[in-house]
Length: 343
Image 1: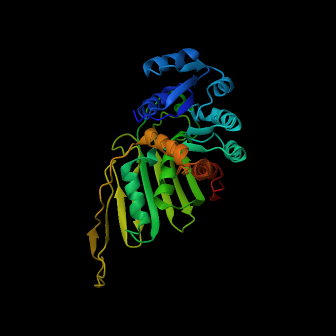
Image 2: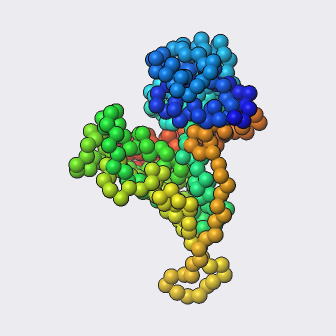
Image 3: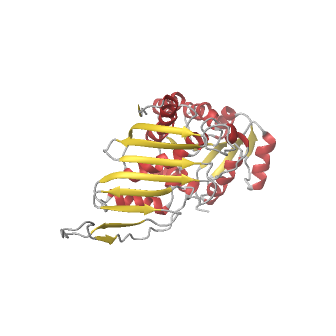
């Protein structure tokens, strides 16, 4: 353990909590209480992860008043994020929560206002950001290695037989998964979404009630275009869960596929020889240092904020833009027209 002196209250003992307790323990964060409407489920998690001294309770307000933690971890279902996070913020506590921020934009904006009004930090764990290959790709683009960015393409194809609630959702891909890819597009480009045209559909042979497939064209505010093609109903030849990426600039291209480190090509500097294809050379990208990934990476940014005041990259004002991409795409698909993305 790192010997952290921080404590937290965790709200939500569902399956996702199993991905949070190991990094919390690894960083020496004391889980003072686990709040859940199902005490028996919470008690089972306390025992499974050896959370010594952790109180099991159904009362968030009482737990906050009793333990006065350094921060709250909101692991509830999206529909409950607004109530839980706003209650913690209004009580004076910082919050780190699971994605998506909320089940609708009005609730998300209310959560942001609660963070502002109470002077507390609220950050969202967009776990795919904390991957060394993704940081390397972002750094290469930001450093101008492929020139001025013109386009980003992401392909995501998985035949996912979940069973349960996703099979009945009206927009399972866009609402439950695509925010990861949309947020990565913002990370890689450093740009914000401006407008979108989207089409959702339910392919032949689908086991979903709603639309598990979509194609989206986002206009970004730097003039680049982000194109997304995805399906949770594609059998065979699966892509990475992070998506397979092509990032194009006016002097080269970067690829990030199958969860491998990015690779690419750039124009040979100074070469102006007339030809159909200009001369290219492989980009030399230095492998990134090892880093904590997923929820662990998000947790480290929250702990860094508590120690130094440094703003996490996915604090709520920033993450609102990623969530806005999701709901703008869903609305565009329903209205069958281009829409402005309003965060």
